[in-house]
Image (tube, rainbow, N blue to C red; front, side):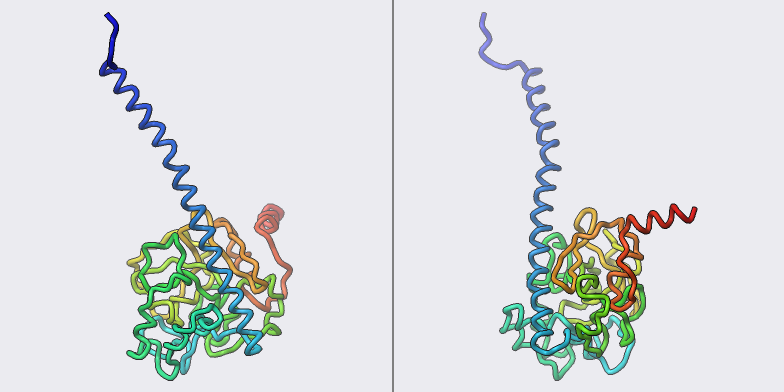
Length: 278
């Protein structure tokens, strides 16, 4: 007699094969999604870079990293703390947000509450969906190594001091201005000129942190992202590089220091120097 149906064994084999194919396809789909998120993240850094240069063209200086009566900055909701991002809103085509920022009072004052709590996509990386709603994924670089934010820092976005193109003696194309960060539960928001929007490269590029870790008030922290294998870095020339997680911290420190006067070093150069010293 001719069969008109599958046997149970044949059905189970087909289901198993489908399961294997789905399992093989899932990583590829996830990789495509992350590639899309990474491209979108990079596209959000482009207007930030253009706004920074536009700000200098208008005022002959880059926006001040953060404001306070004195340093070092503590990551607490007290003080002036108006930051570099807030000063770019007009140039990022956000006049409504710009008008709502009251710089005569602290960023934590009730007058600025609505803006501080705003979830603004223009400063959020698509891969950082678990961050606080009002957090910024993008941070100005205040110093090469870990130290409290202060007026004597060697990055471009520092406390109370306006840096100009002439102060970037290493050249705009050699100096990193902005990168990404991983936010913690204590993030003070995208308008706060604390570790919320200022970072260094003291620990190199970090790929994950415990968001519930309690940091000392003057601790700043390193750059990093949830992108696999690296993080975006925006240079003063407008160039955006995807910097590998394995980059030697000394290379990052040199990128951030606006006036160290050293020849640009690559990861490969440092590796060769290590081998030569053995």
